[in-house]
Amino acid sequence: MYIGTGDATNQNAAQDLKLLAGKILRLNDDGSIPSDNPIAGSPVFSYGHRNPQGLTWDNRDNLYETEQGPTKNDEINLINLVKTTAGQSRNVQVLKNMSIR
Image (cartoon, rainbow, N blue to C red; front, side):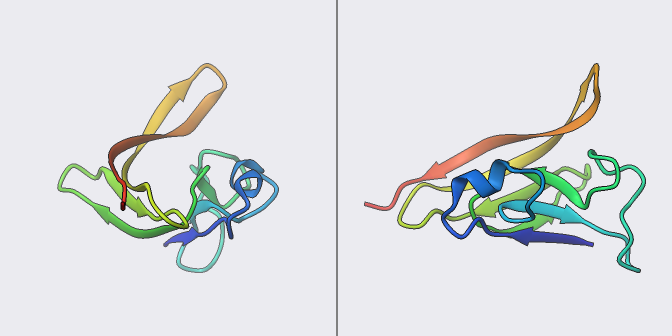
């Protein structure tokens, strides 16, 4: 199960891994944390988001998300798995940034 949480216009919360705001969370159906989540023991799957609302996958299992800002610069993002020497982390690739004038 994937859950998008908004940052409530607090950008620092989206970067703080101790908080759940501004994140995409991943849980098992029973509410437990998947053993292969990027951060061991944490429901955080991806972080640094403003207000993730739409989540979808393509036929190659790529995860896409849409997020909205308070007034403009809405985005469509591809959430990538990035291998690092420290383990796994998630990387957000902005595919489309849409400004409202």
